[in-house]
Image (tube, rainbow over all chains, first blue to last red; front, side, top):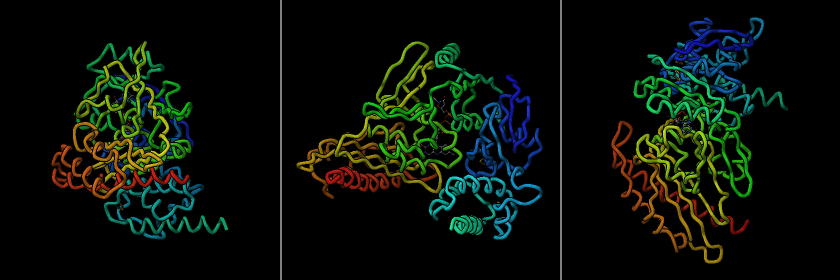
Length: 160
Length: 293
Ligand SMILES: Cc1cc2nc3c(=O)[nH]c(=O)nc-3n(C[C@H](O)[C@H](O)[C@H](O)COP(=O)(O)OP(=O)(O)OC[C@H]3O[C@@H](n4cnc5c(N)ncnc54)[C@H](O)[C@@H]3O)c2cc1C
Ligand code: FES
Ligand code: FES
């Protein structure tokens, strides 16, 4: 079976890894790079618990071949925050109690990061729409939306 | 569950991809975004021995307009379409629809070539594109041909393409003046559509009568369904509640939805009728609104 050395930049760190054709990006991140933030849920692009950013766009890492990510920049939840400080999105999730078991949280935080990078002050329909593909089985969607609204408000205040 | 073993090839040109496919017609599959294909492979419905990644082929990801035609490269993603200023300007019905497709992650990787080439009944783009008389460009190792998109679809997950052929481009002529189009889809949450309905109406600016119509349904049969009888029911008439209701009844009867986990056949027919009525009304409104502008 095809094996190939790929170059994967993950959270700013360049990795050279030999992967198999059937390996998913999620498997590479978790099993070879020990980055266990992204999680396997549905395995079919529905739940979003495996969400990572690939060249700044959210993807389901359960459904991207590692070989296909060759040369890409990957951001996982482990790459957020700097110098031990939490990223503002992480902080907002804590302040609003936007999780219980937190299985969905790493994926959701990256989905929120994409949303705010594209729409710094999302409208209510936009934020509901762009987060609808990330499912929280503990049912924290109300708190998640509150956390994101607080970030959007802050973005607005900084603009003024 | 993970994936079965397979060999992975990156093609660097269309002839190279085509030759590889021609040599292994039963075993090799084109791999674009992989959104649909990997799912089938995980479920062991498809077991290709070779995946031919076509994303390294240069020059297949673009959105251009020239000579009154919008050309979309096969590797253009849903996300590209969603945010393209050119699409928003010239084919706004597609900008309107794209945010509804799947979720943001599928849109980031899924391509228009894969959306059409998969011939899955539960998709959004085919009815809209057929209502605009879209064509596709298909290429193999040495030849290129154009075919109406309508002629691509043969049955459930079945196209008229030969194994060695790739879709390379989608072409849509700019809508005629006084043409209005509306697409409506019904789905539960951010999921595949349960019913999709595209209606295009061209009116005569003087008489305001409908001179041409397209009524295309998605998800309620093995292929997108052009309901010609409904189109005929609209032609030669101005917008009337009665005639749109008649076209909608014809569409609800003509389609062949299946009862599945999501809804019964009867329910889907009822949805078709409602969507068709509303889409006809809105398409007429859009066609007439161009009378002022
Ligand atoms: C969770 C989920 C939700 C979805 N929801 C929607 C929805 O709401 N609406 C909608 O329209 N679609 C939906 N889809 C389908 C999605 O649009 C398509 O999966 C996507 O556009 C396919 O593109 P791809 O590049 O990923 O194709 P791939 O998975 O790479 O390929 C799909 C098939 O097409 C063939 N193929 C690929 N490219 C070409 C080409 N250039 N020429 C010929 N054949 C080719 C492949 O061989 C394969 O058989 C959904 C998919 C998922 C997984
Ligand atoms: S595990 Fe990838 S989307 Fe659910
Ligand atoms: S917090 Fe448990 S799944 Fe979201």
